[in-house]
Amino acid sequence: MKLYSYVVARDFGFAPNPFYRFCTLGTCKPIIRRCAKVGDWIVGTGSKTRGCERHLVFVMRVTEVMSFNHYWSDPRFKQKKPNLRGSKKQAFGDNIYYQDPATCEWCQLDSHHTHPDGTPNIKNINKDTKTDRVLISDDYIYWGGEGPEIPETYLNFCGFDLRKVRMGHKSNFPDNMVNEFVDWIRSLGNQGYCGTPLDWSKSP
Image (cartoon, rainbow, N blue to C red):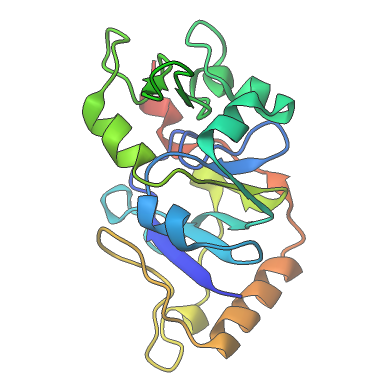
């Protein structure tokens, strides 16, 4: 069991997407999506610019991994295909990629990762599809902007800080730290979607 930690710099409920009974990481963080395995934990902490660097945004235990095409075609995740004319929960769907059967080129749905006029954003396509894997969890907690403060224990656990303060991620945590952190998470008694994305207050 490995733990990957990173800063959720923009918390719109898109990456990760915590809606419709599953937390999914299908865009951004290509290195984590490439490396994480079933049973590993992904932890997102708040950003310093929002004054939330000591708080959790979400935690998820990876319970499935699949390709973009499988994610696109799986009926369980149909509701995660974005509808920009719907609610915010619908608008920030992350099920946005599939390959054209004829050309095998990546297609990108009008979404949070396209240009404002709905045309494909090649930069985002290249970054997101660099790793053809979607991380899925039905064992997660998403607090958004209402996450708990991280106990001091995990900010200096024998010299290890749970948080990744800058870009990228960290995963070099000792096993006993990971186990104790997971035990603490379990002790909170939370499950699933528990709070609103912090940046929804800034979105249309």
